[in-house]
Length: 397
Image (cartoon, rainbow, N blue to C red; front, side, top):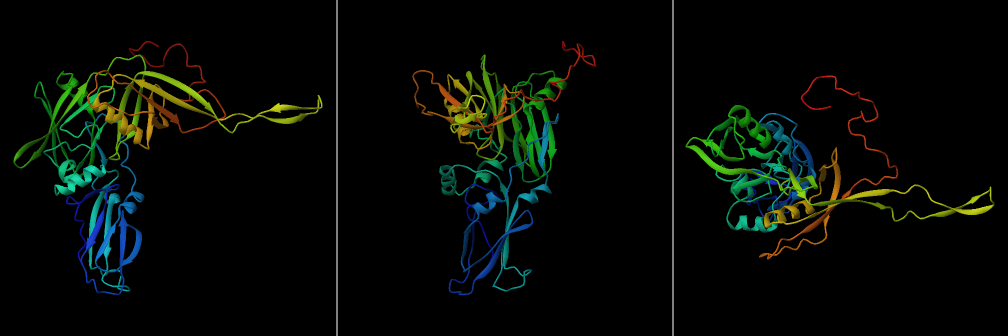
């Protein structure tokens, strides 16, 4: 019995989409057959079945897989995220044995998949099944498509504001060459990459063209090298951020399980909310022989609100993605990241707006604290640093 995953053609699977493994067998069999599931080389589940075999393992895949690590700060244009050897930690193997009590080394069949934390919408999943494709053959492993793991857009054009530059993750199923061409000068940057998960740093890419070619680049074409030549994949366009006195910069994990950044310009408010259970009581004061009111310290929670206007259709989808994310951090104006829970009162968007629309989002800090003390960021806030810096620099001290 050779197991198969009929709706996954690429060997890669999103953890939050169906991972249904099937295998034919004698339907008249009455003796249960054992099977096991391994993730990262470790057995995480043992079970038994009566042929034919059909099990959806998406819950097991999601529970045993962690998100791809965040890329470290680097001046490299292409940053390695998960190496070819590291992909073994994201490999799920299903082993089917012929009968109960058989030797553990005797296997009727097995199948392995590379798991990617995240998923696509149910609507898109159904449509891809109708087309006879999976998300990876359709896009994320397709050299002739936008293969980046971004939910900012589903088209070949990736438009990102200059205040939202964050590495774009992608998967290399095999070793190959990725070519980045600046659209105006046609200057190219190419690099051979091995199998694994990589990230493209747009900031480092622009710095490369500025230092080496003296071009402040904002538009790029992405190609994948193949035996038949270069294959056009997509375009990356950096646009100017709107001018705003206040703004929030947030980092959020998108539906595909990857961090992205979003610039939310608008009027920003900060409010403190007290614990609802903080009620004053009474205690006896022997100095006056009376009961006096008493209350202990009150826990407070901080909430950041931003009202944005105008908001276009593409930004509306981005706001919906942020509101649905379970891993959101405020990066600015805070001096260090603060984890928050996003919410939005009304996300109604007109298909044919006659006037600019505005939206208000709230971000509630996850910490509730009764000790309100000044923030510690660098650890040097409480130390006198002197009038001048120890080393000479062009910046005014």
